[in-house]
Length: 293
Image (cartoon, rainbow, N blue to C red; front, side):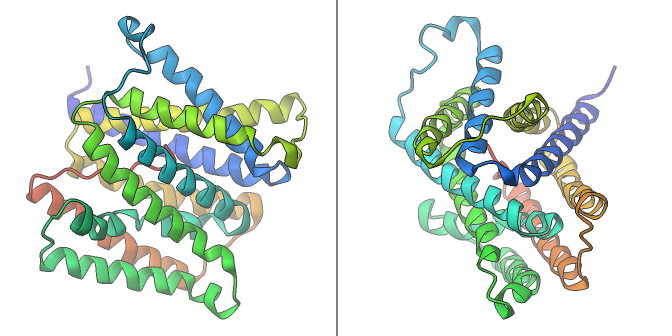
């Protein structure tokens, strides 16, 4: 029988693996319209959440007292999702994953303005270190005017606001309902892209596209379970295995070799994020930033 901390580690590892494979499939799907990929991410996520919702909520699963906050969570989540999917299709996998780790940095800044939180010296130093890391990673993009380097930053900004709204929603709303509303929203939004041309996939591609929604939905559930069973400080470092997976996948599938600047920048961003997480735990404020939820 596994202990709670061991279960937390297992769920976090499964979450990281699922997100990493989903990133891989999203990058592979560049021959399909982005809106069509968003549909598969949303629709099969909805199906997954319907399977896990409590039986007594089937008739009124949509009920919420906070529709406005759900709307903001879904709106900014959709922007973040579009940004990260666009980045994955146009930048090296390790680069996108490295910059995405900066989301807690932006969450710290936004919490000052949206939650009136006080940020001390240690977290401000962590923010500065994180921004230096981002600049080091994106510097090639600035010199070559590669606009796609801005998309992972947009993702971080969007997910930072999402993290804050989820913190507020989770005081009264179940995790599955928060995720269900988002999956349903991106499914509906994807329909508006049909006139721009969807492509009929063959059986193999259909299975891969379906896996985007299933993996994304399962990964976020496992992430939540990980934080439920184990302390955040114990399992959060496992999230950075995603960079290892990104380097391996990028090298063997797309022949991508991360530059020294990318690795140095990633180290600074990860260090910054760990400092922020540690300070949040010390101050008894648990901030968890979902990935593509």
